[in-house]
Amino acid sequence: MGDTVLVVGAGPAGLSAAANVTAAGYKVVMVEKEEVLGGAPILSGYARLVPSGEWAKDAIGRMVSRVEEDANCTVHKNAKVTQLDGEAGNFTATLSNGETVKAGAVVLATGFTHFDSINKPEWGFGTYEDVLTTTQMEQMVSSGKIICPSDGRVPERVAILLCVGSRDRQIGREWCSKICCTVSANLAMEIKEISPGTDVFIYYMDIRTYGLYEDKFYWKSQEEFKTKFVKARIAEVTASGDGRLLVKGEDTLVKRPIVIPFDIVVHAIGMDPNEDNPEISRIFGVGLEKHGFIERAEHYTNTCGTTRRGIYSCGAAYAPETIDDSISQGAAAGARAVADLHALVRKAG
Amino acid sequence: MATYAEMQQIYDDIRGDFRYDHELNGCLNCGICTATCPSAQFYDYSPREIVQLLWTENVEQIYDAMQEKIWACAQCMTCAARCPFKNSPGGLVAIMREVAIKHEMQSAKDVLRPFGRVMLKLITTGNQLSPDMIQPDHFPDWGPNIQKVEGDLRLLRKAIPVKTLQTVDTAWEVSLKTSVEMYTIWEMTGVLRSLELMDENLFDVIEDFIDEKREDYEDWLEEQEEDEEDDD
Image (cartoon, rainbow over the protein chains, first blue to last red):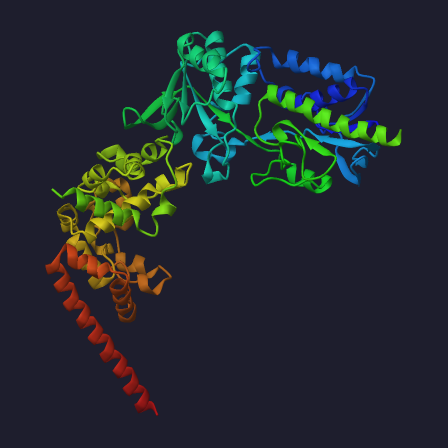
C-alpha cells in the first residue's frame, strides 16, 4: 500500500530506517531472517560499542524496543522475502511465512557477513583453541573474564592481528573493513582493564583510526593501556612445545624475522558482503558492485538509491560500515522511502 | 664499481622485463614476505627490501643487492603465495638474476661458479642426483629416514611403475630424442647464451657435448630410415 515501507533487516541500519519512517507518520513492515532483532551487534554478542562505550545490548537494545513498541511497525521474525512484484510505489512482497506485504518503497538493510577465518588457515583459527576472532573476544570481554580457552589460564600476552579477511588480494578481499583498527584498539583496552597482567600487541599494516578515533582510541590505547603496535603482517601461527602459540612475523622497523610466543591470538576479522547477496540481488532485482556488496546509485542526488527505482539501501549492505554511520544511513534511506510515499499521497490527492 | 649510468641501465632492464608489472603491484611494507621467507632466517636477505628498492627506484641499492643478496633467494615463492598485494618478490629476484647475467656481473659469475658441475651433469645426463649417489654417510641430516634408500636399490627401483625411473646411476633415463629437444629449448630461450656469458670454458665443453649428441641423434634417425627401407 501507499503508506507502508518494507524494511528488510533489523540491524542498526534497518531499525533506524523503521523508526524514522514511522516518526514521519507512515507504516513499516519489518522482515528479519533471525529470531531476534538487533543485527550483528546483538547476534554476535558485541561488548562495548565504538565510539560511545555503551554496551551493545543496551544501546542497540534501545533501538530494538523502540521498534517493537511501535504500533505502526509490524515485525516478521524468522522470515525472508521470497518474491517481490510490482514497481516503485506499488510493490508486493511474498514472505517465507506465507504473508503478503504491500509497500510503496523498500529499504534493504541487509548488512554484512563476518569474514570466516577458516579461509586463512596459516593463522591457526580452527586448528588451535586459543586462536579467536574479535567477535569471540568481545564475547569473552562481555563475560568479564579473560582466559585461554584451552586450559583456562590467564594469558600473559595477547596478539591481535589486523586485516584478517581485509586488504588481501590472495583471497579476493580487496577492501578495508574500516572498523577493525578502532575496534581492536578498543578491545586491547578492554582486555587490559579486565586483566591488568595481560600485555596486548597489535600487528598492523596501516592504522586507520580515522577522524576523532585517533586520540580517543589509538593514542589512548598506547598511552594509558600500554598496547604495543607492531608494524608487521603475520606469516603464520604455529604451536610451541609448551602449549603456547608462536607468531611468526617480520619486525619491519628492526628489519629481521621474529618468532614471538603468545597465549591468545585474536583475528580482527573483516566484513564480507552478506553471504545472501546473490539471492537478495535476484529477488529484489538490484545490482551488486564488483566486491559483491549492494551497488550504490549515483550518490549526490539519488542518495541511498540502488539500481532499481523505489528500492533503497543503507549501512553495511553497501560496504563495510560503522554502527553509527549505518544508523545515519538508515535514517537517510527511511527519508528517501518516505518521500516516495509522500509523492504518491500528493498525486492521489 | 659501476658508473651511475650503468646502474641505471641495469635498473631499466629489470623494469623493462615483461613480467615486471605482473610481479610488483605496490607495497604496504607489511613484511609478511620476509616473515615467511626461509632464506631470510639464515642470510642477510629480505624480500621486502628487494621490493622496496625496486618500488622506490633506488638504482644504487638495487645494484648493491645484486652483488650477493639476490642469490640467497631459494625461489620457493612462498612470498608470492602470502603477499596481500599479490606481489612476487621471488619473481622479481628471478628477473634481477637474469639481468645480472645479461650484464656479465662478476658477482653472478662468482656465485654461479660452484654450480658448474651441477650444470654439466644436468645437461649431459638430464638429471643430477642419482639413487646410487645417496650414501648414508653423505646425508647425516636425513636421520633415520636414510634407511629408506639402503638395501637393494635396483630391486626397489624396479618396483616403480614408471619406465624411465628403473635406473640407479641416473635419477631417471632420459631418451636421446628428449635430450636433443631440451638442447633446442635451451638454445632458443637463451639458457645457453646465459651460460656462455657466465662461464665460457664450461660452455665450450657443453657445446661439444651437445654437438655430439645431435650427431648421435641424426645417426639414429638415419638408421631408422634404413631399417624401414629394408623392411619394404
